[in-house]
Image (cartoon, rainbow, N blue to C red):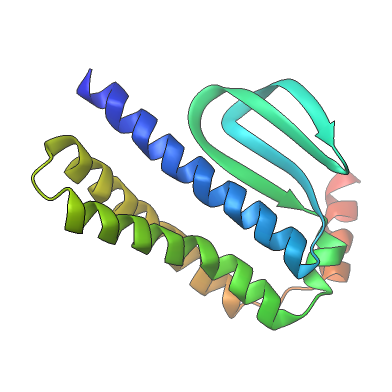
Length: 147
């Protein structure tokens, strides 16, 4: 039962952070194409404006997909801000849990999982920050994979 509660709390934090990142990306002028709640095969997809929203079978996490041409051809500072926004929100959630719920066993486990997720996503973002990427290389790679 404790594991189920930990997963539900972790998912709610993850979905909240990704939804706020979705709103931020729209404000910054990016074109998100898909917002998915949970992972795995899609169930119940529907469109809101130009964004396909879908729920999936495996109840872990959430994600946002962007139009690669729009994302990689946009301002690099905006790209980095959007990439690291999730890391900052993870740290804020971690601090709130640590400061206000220090004695709660379940929330301490959630905080530990958030810290592990932060370390993994921060290292991936750091690697992608210094890797040269542009839309033309991505579309060429996609065409090569199709053939």
